[in-house]
Length: 260
Ligand code: NAD
Image (cartoon, rainbow, N blue to C red):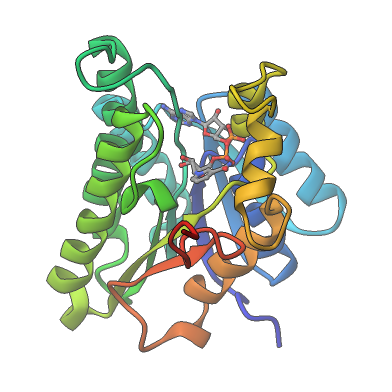
């Protein structure tokens, strides 16, 4: 018996990275995966790859920061599937940009709108499709939701909000059988990190990727598939008594303080 047999799962940000890996993993476990992303061409490829390997998947356009777009997606899902079992709010962006007094307002607004408001909007409109049978909501947060990053205040603020939105959702719907948890990834090899990484060296002569490997006790970046494994645990009945949790997958990065 597969772990997500008969499940209908919505995954935002499913075109690439953690969302794409999770879509594949969920489909391998028997789910009908509804892959949603604002990158229409690439999300079609994710869904096609799943179908080509014998799984069930559909591709949908959504901009999670736009209320009308989220409502339109919800209506399509409702017409076609009537209910969902899992909502994986994973779409997100990241930007550096300086300390608070330097940080561009435009970058702050963009991150809050996608990473935090998008998570709220998707939950607001999709939860009614879960109320009859219960389900699992998974939000992609970050280790940056509880720890400070270097000059990435917008991301810190947005993911901090995602953590507490997750707990509020868990508390409000616990008696209705809807669980809500978050994943807090460390640094994972995805296109998002490629955009941050570049080849520029810091004062110690390290690129962003080198520096992340150095500070991570396991000595490497994580793989999207390793985050998909956490998502699968949270989506399935294996985590049936787990709600309101932020589960970290960071190779030990947030487990220590700087050595003296
Ligand atoms: P990614 O760039 O590969 O994936 C992000 C996906 O979200 C893309 O497919 C993108 O098109 C989509 N997206 C962006 N804005 C959107 C919008 N407004 N509406 C719909 N889709 C949108 O990066 P990833 O690393 O796989 O990121 C997935 C999640 O993981 C994000 O929430 C990110 O903040 C989080 N995260 C990533 C890392 C990391 O190191 N890669 C670390 C911590 C948290």
